Length: 218
Image (tube, rainbow, N blue to C red; front, side, top):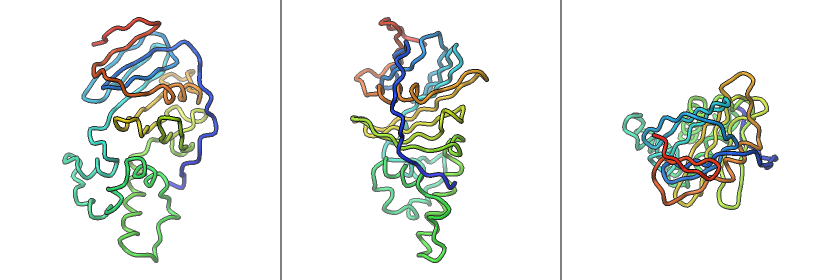
């Protein structure tokens, strides 16, 4: 829980032959061009590549921010946290996620106002149970010309990397990138290929294309 984001220093981008994928009104490239299987759900798709990489892409139903999502999703039963989060819920989705990641044990002030201490303890608990397991290997903030966000997990040390991407015009999206096989690894350049290319489109279907050929995969 002591880990907080630092600026990403490696912006290299893989130029390996890849695949263009499109789901839920967004398009992005992955630097893998082998066969794959997909399982499409409601605003979420899981993709397993024959080369050993796994990818989950999702578009949160509630776009106003992580905290709003917790409070407004009735299935989570966290509506009572709204007054505790207070003004945080009126901040941007990016700022809400940044606040969560930057909350550490040292930021909880036991001698400060009780409501602030309760809020920060709650954020710290949420950070512990909701942020991906790669957090212990590092967290990074990234900035591209048309988007910004956070990466949880260092691919040099972790088999899983979580991405939260903001300011895409239409909203925020999330990725979970993994290496399913023991000998398969991820690189930052591969992660950056996804981050650099993700953008909103006008198409809402689940369509994948490779080498200039499009096919609907259902």
